[in-house]
Image (cartoon, rainbow, N blue to C red; front, side, top):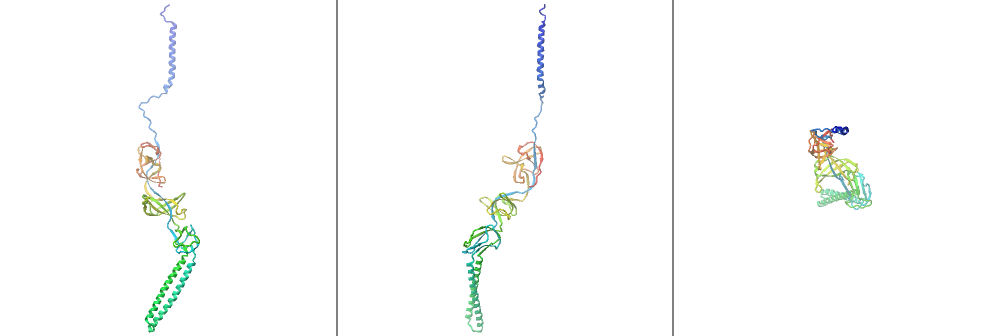
Length: 381
């Protein structure tokens, strides 16, 4: 038996080991093959995706006629307030014909005093006047007869002159008696108090049975019932206010139309405010002493305007995002003026025709790219 000859069992062992190794490699390859297929192939030189465009709405800067409103506050007062007092003293009030809130007409009886004393004084004056007129007739007759006798030489010239002087004295006494009588009649007429003008009684200061004192105020009357609002307006706004401008007066939930009657020529040094007299319409609920607000509508002027939604605030200052031709926006500082009807007046910072972002402006930054989805058209307020 040859010992150098390969053993059959050894060959079979090596062959089994090789087969087992190949089987293991096949299993490993099958396990990692799906993962190798799923891994993306690297792309050489690929750039990152640009950020998406923000959709916005824009509106053009337009020049429209826009009115401005000046606001003032003040008290309701009478256009003219008349203090009506007693012209005679020492008379007792017997009748009060009107009360507070009553509307009176010129010449209407408002109050009556007891006329007994004044009636007696008038009767006495009538008697004195009648006596004087009778004496005057006698004196004139004596003078006339003396003149005839003087022509015939039957009476002295001195006597005629004395009769002439007596007639003149009688005439003077008659004139004085007539004036005294007219005074007594006027005083009797004052026994009833008449309204000096049309108006509304706003105060009554007398009671039935009271005794009058000369000059004592008995009633206070608003002439013609006309009321005004004395609105105080800042001095810088006064030059734009003039008579005839329309005014909206606001008192609580009530609103009414009025008109500027006049502007006071002076300004209060303490408050730097001027006084605007606003004539109120008849029949409103306002009363003297009430406090109200006056919204004075100035004449319309042509000015640059934008929707109020276009205004954003950066560092507590108004600004606007303007769309540029390259689809980017730039932040523009502006000077805003009056607000009316959803529009704002642009005093400085923008030109007519420029496009301002109105929707989505709060999410923008200077230089952002945008996509316009709608453009608004403005209308005059």
